[in-house]
Amino acid sequence: MTEGGDGARRAADRANALRESARRGVPYTAVSGLLQIVFALVGMLLLVRYLEPDTYGVWVILVGLAGPLVLMFSLGQLHALLRFMPALERAEDRRELLWRVAIRRTAVVALGVIVLFVAYPLFAERFGIEGRRPVLAILMPGFVALAANEYLIAALNVAFRQREIFVATISQQIVFVGGIALGIVFEQDLGYFAVVFSLAASLQTGISFAACVRHYGGPQARDLHGPLAEAAGQRRYRLTSYVDDVGTMLLSSPVNRLLLAGLASTGEVAIFAVASNIVDRLLALQPIQVFRPIATVSLFARYEQSGDIKDVNRMFRFILGVDRSVTMLFVVLFLPLGEPLLSFVFRPDYAASYAPAAVLIATTALFTMPAGMVAQTLKRPQALVWSKLAVLINLGLGIPLTLRYGALGMATASAISSLVRNAIVYFVLRLEFDLRFPWSTLGRYVAAGATSMVIIEGLERVVPLLVAGSIGLVVYAISLRLFAVLDVSERAMLVSLLPTRMQGAARFLLR
View 1: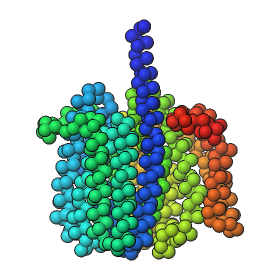
View 2: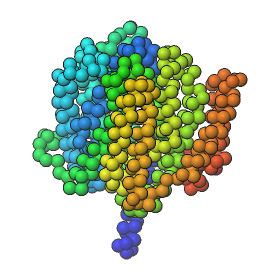
View 3: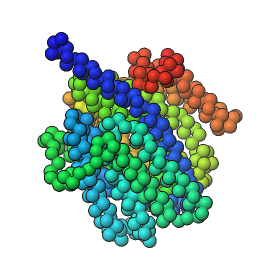
View 4: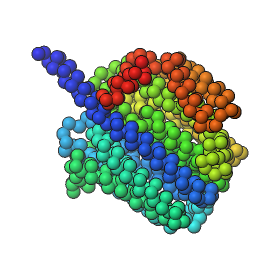
C-alpha cells in the first residue's frame, strides 16, 4: 500500500476512534447535564423559598465571588489543556502538563482567596454584605476546590472520561441539595449553607482527582518546579483565550449581579438572580452546552485532520440548528406562561423576575451562536478579544439602565451586549473565512415558535396552564418538522451521534 494510502487509513482510523469515544460519552454527558439542571433548580427553589429576598441576595453575591476569582487567576491554562493536551502522544507528557497546570493554578487561587478575605471590609458595604465575613471564610475552601476541579474536569474531558465526570458532578449535587433540604428542616442560617457548599465542592474535586490519578498517573515532586514548556503559538493562543475569558466574565450573570449590587438593593439583586439563574439553567440544556466538552474536542480534532472550512460550516450550521430547536422551545413556553408560574413556584415577590427573564431568554434564543467555538477551532482567538468591546456596552448601558429600571435594566443591557459580542466574532471571522450563518433556518425557527405561541396564548384562557403548555409542546414539535428546520443530512448526522440502541427510535421521529 502507498504511503498516501497508509496516511489516509490512519486518518480514517483516528476519526472512527474519535467518533466512537464521543459516542460512548454521550449518555453520561446527557444524563449528567440534565440532572445538574434539575438539582440546580431544586437547590435554588429551596433557598429562594426559605430565605428572605435580601438574605438570598447576600448569598448570591457571596457565592458569585467564586467564578470571577477562579477565572482571573487561570491565565488561559484551562483552554490550553483542552486545545493542546489531545495532541500530546506520550502519556507522561499529558500527565506532567495536567499536574503542573492544576497544582500551580490552584495554589495561586488559594492566595487570591486569602487576599479577598483580608480586603473584605473595603467592598462589603458597597455590596450590602456587611457582617457576613464569617460566611465568606467558610466558603473559601469551596472556592479553592472549585478552582482545582476546573482543570481536573478538563483533563477528564480530553480523555472522554464522561462516566467519572458524571459520578463526581452528581455526588456534589446530591450532597449540596440534600444539605440545603436538611438546613431548611432544622432552620439553619447562611453559615450552615456555606459549610454545605464547601463540603460538596470538596467531594467533587476529590472524586475528579482520584479519576485523574487513575487515568493519567499521580502528581510528582518535579511537577512543582521548573518552567511550563509551551511554544510561542501556544502561549499566544492561551493568553488570547484568557483575555477572551476575562471579557466573557465581565458580561456574565455573576458579574452583572455584583454590578447590580453596587447600584441597587440586595432585593433587586435577588430578583435579577432568580431571573438569570432560571435562564442560565435553561440555557444549560442547550445541546451545545450539554455536549460542549465532546463537541469541542471533536470539532478541534476534525478540523486538525481536514483543515477544510466546509467541515466547520457544516458543523456550525448543525450545532446552531439543534441548539435553536431547544432555545426556541424556551421562548414558546416561557413568554406566555412564565409570569404565573414564577409566582406559583417561587414567592409572589419574584413575579418581578418575569420581565428580565423574558428579555434574556428571547435574546438568547434568537441571536446566540457557537461563534466562540468556531473561532477557537480556526485558531483565531483574536476574534474573541475584539468581541469584548461589548463589555463597554454592558457597562455603558448597564449603569444608567440599572439606576432607572433595576433588574430589568441590567437584563436589557446584558442582552444587548451579548448580541453585539456574537456579531463581532462572526463578522471578524467572515473577513478571513467563508463562514456562513443560516439566516433562512432562523426564519423557519421563528415561524415555528410564533405558531406555537399563538396557540398557547389562545388555549391558556380556556384550559389550565399545564394543559396549554403540553399542547403547545406538541404543536412546536410538529411545527419544527413542517417548517423543515433541519435538512435530511443534518437529521442523519444527529441520529449518527446517538448510541446505537437509540438510533432506531430517533430515526423514526426525525424521518
